[in-house]
Image (cartoon, rainbow, N blue to C red; front, side, top):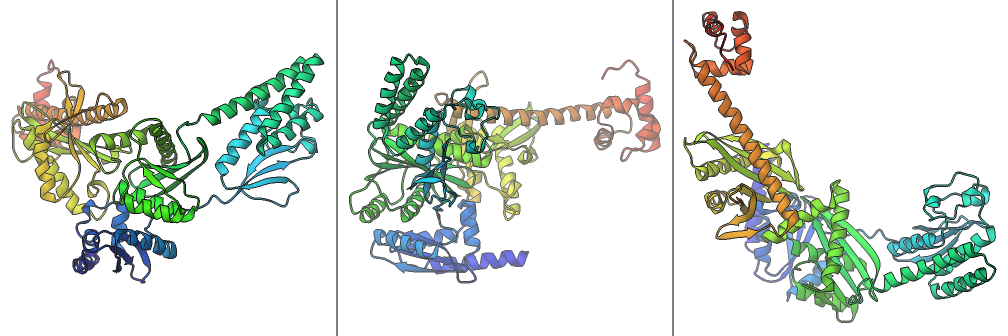
Length: 621
């Protein structure tokens, strides 16, 4: 194992030495594995600076980058005249070689169809493939999202069944489902549906799906008036409801966002290692398509967004006039130029700061958060609050793995430190750790915090190859306390060469969370309810954990002191008795033979203990 580690470190040193000889010019670098396969392609403004970062300290790298670097045997590079040429070449090479560690969005959309099945009782559904089954197919359509939304709307408006049963074969004698009772299905399965009326409704639904909603409304209006003249008010009311439902749907589509023209909106949600990219596509103020993709996290959110956009438009050819993004984009000018050349017209990358466009981005972000939460098996708001915390603290990425620390003691005695971990916004109790302050005695929270963090990162150096427990670095460190605690711990991070965001959790005079502390000031958090709740929960949990450990140690020390009153019992034997019997009551109730089972307790000493307690029957414990 040591030889393998040494070999990896030697290779990294050789690659770093090679990277330091690269020119400070723009270009593309190509990482290869032992088999000579290309596993990653990237671009750089200055090749030497960018490539050498990979082979320096791995501490600041994401999990994905560390895995990639571990598999790099050699690299090649191509110098270009400009950053833009580097971007164009990078996109071309990625499309050609499809490297394992690049962001490669999988285009699994294909085409979607509207399937119309049945003869007497037609049913309508959205499908992804056209089958040779005798059914009628309308399409193909490029947006499965739009097809599904339209089919759902048509079935609800015209009250067509969505259960998938074949009513032509006599299935109209079954018990109706819930949709019938909530007026979303006409109830063909009851056997009481007029076949001609159903056929009219199905035909109107098909015309509606083909985009002829205006003519459908005119036909329905005429039928409603005829039904009223015949005094068939029940049918007239059903037709009126269909007309109103179509008009309501049209009005809703028209005012999705008044200021949104043709544009694609990109937003990302992050977890510990994963990213979900959501894309909403708009035209004429209406949302006509929605997509989402999962991939591993890059070095920074700005780099990830740039890589995601280039990968997306490598497989999508209809580029809009505006690309709206949620946050910064690396190399924005070059990316805009690349999009313009692919489109043949001007395209701008826009990051809104106010107005209705901010609401559009918010909707896209919430979609990404919900999709990622579903993949991780957590709630969408747990993902959202970490991203809000990222923005509030100015972090590069959402802090999926947070460590928090607190010190507890009684007037400087029995000082301990507690470490709790929150993963994806939830307590990870298997990662909690406890520390006994060993380097000094007395009341000094700053010195205690310094010792705890020093020991924690000493353990990291021993176990960093495992990537688990102490061998894993946090995305964020929170200390119970203010600027003083932050100042005491920052030198520890500097000494270990760690660039981990470090903040304090400040309490008010009622011992409630008030703000986040950093060197030089504080950040108010009460205005952000979700972030405030998360920080409060973390602070309360680390305080509870450290105080509970302190109370446990303090109680044991008190018990040990009372045992030391017995002739022949010192601290070592007292601790041995407590390990064996746990409480003074159990020690007092034990007979001589039982007392002898404790480590270091002779029969003579056991007799003294027994005599001590049985001579003091009135003692309370």
